[in-house]
Length: 48
Image (tube, rainbow, N blue to C red; front, top):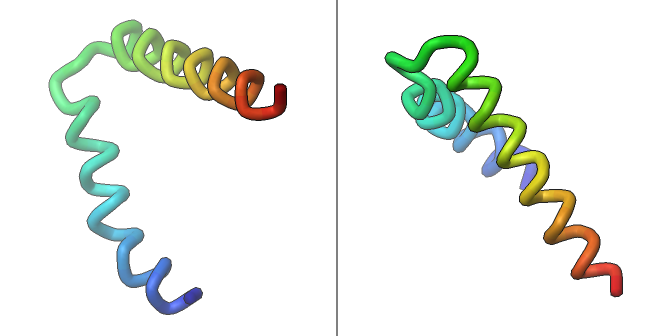
């Protein structure tokens, strides 16, 4: 499993950085903050 995960990391990292390509830092922060809030909401509902 570790080998599979490590094999996919370069493509995943590239995709992550492409999402933010061309955005200014404030837009990047906004996108990241929204993603973290969404993750917290999902975790909250999953635990109920």
